[in-house]
Image (tube, rainbow, N blue to C red; front, top):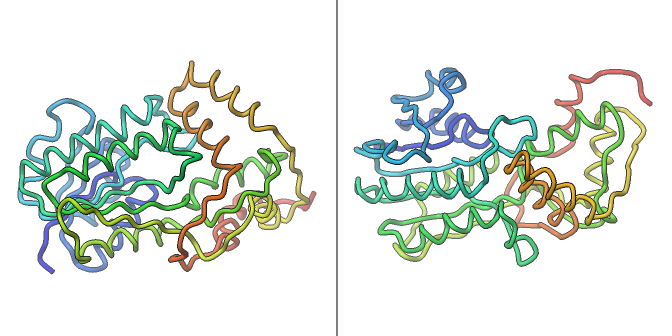
Length: 297
């Protein structure tokens, strides 16, 4: 396969896995990153690295020249400790729509976008609205498009292991809502699979993906404590309180506040997609828990 691929967001959780998969298959990849220090560690996996902020007007000029397929995992991080404070609309929507415009100008044939799984309960949140804005732009684009929508990647729960190692975990609502989160590698596999699927212009492929285990939010938290070999300490928190905290947080950190608002709703509604992954949560949490070894509580 001699196509040239542009991968946006290669330093992210999913983007890094996509890059490794493409490298393993011998496919030439041009990466697009904003953070030079992080992107340097990926140098051996690429044939060309561009350092730009996709949200800056005109910054993407020429990045799609000679490219056949764009895979975009570009987006604001969801980790609380990340430095980014701009809204998801200002990063995800603006950056990806600008990249789409440059892809169309350069005659790119296919655009594969990492979106997010949503339903009527979450589609009104700022986090999901930003993804929907990109999907809507892709629906009317003059190229073939695919949306891969994970229920939630394992890495998004990594911070919970650190929290549980130090103290109790909040359980929003009753903790009964079901979900099947998926490993970043499995999401990458789903994105790369879209390189060769049949797609008609104007009729994007919509692919919802989840992991092999469907669990309640309470069961997910209990698995984290099992991995840490600690007795579980869960504190039930009403959704309204998380929503109120998110509104206050938005005044200081727009991104974190928006994502907390999403979590407040998502944690109390089911988010289950077809199981395509093979990696299991226990193994993932066990690996992280080794950093916090200590006697059981």
